[in-house]
Image (cartoon, rainbow, N blue to C red; front, side):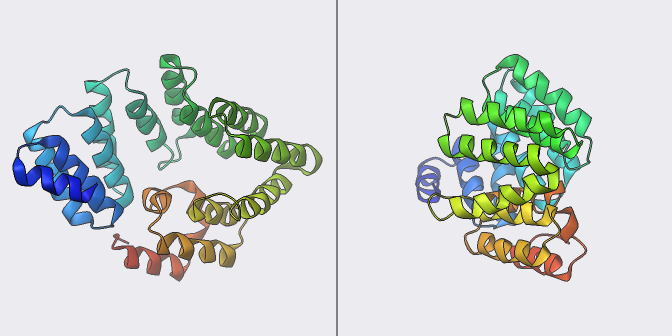
Length: 252
């Protein structure tokens, strides 16, 4: 992506989309300052690119700047009211401020646009989990797995649902992370996901071991969520968390 964008800009530096692609590449490399310059240049050339606003919002999420993230997500929705990704990102932003009711409200609006949009079902389920509505969590998760035609995820949610029926939420989360570790031997599972689930269980050492794996591969889920996602709340007072942010080049 970086090579393509660089070549395109060498031919014509006024291509806003190419600056956006280069910004994405810099974000993937955790070169936050370079990414910001490219996003700013892209929006200077074309301030009405909804996709660029969404991606710039995600950039600010990585930095922990929810005010700027909201600004860009809202602008993206203003520009393209029916854009599923823009609406999804705006809804998801409310996780950072723990306004889970707002996540539910806005994800339901996203699903009014397209009831088959799996990411909205998944995040709606996450909001329900954080609100303690565990049956609805599992219901939305299963919907997302079916819509994605993801047999691995469908098997996972069914196993977790069975464990929840037997031993409740804590047992379900333990079963989830154990099965994810097994899945990770067969298919790619972002290590930051597993780390987050260990964090929810209060197993900090295991969480940080998986975060180190995520760090080594510059996990996209890690950079998008480490600063504000509730998944990692239990880790934020640990010195290892501050050290991780420092190594990622993120503000404390």
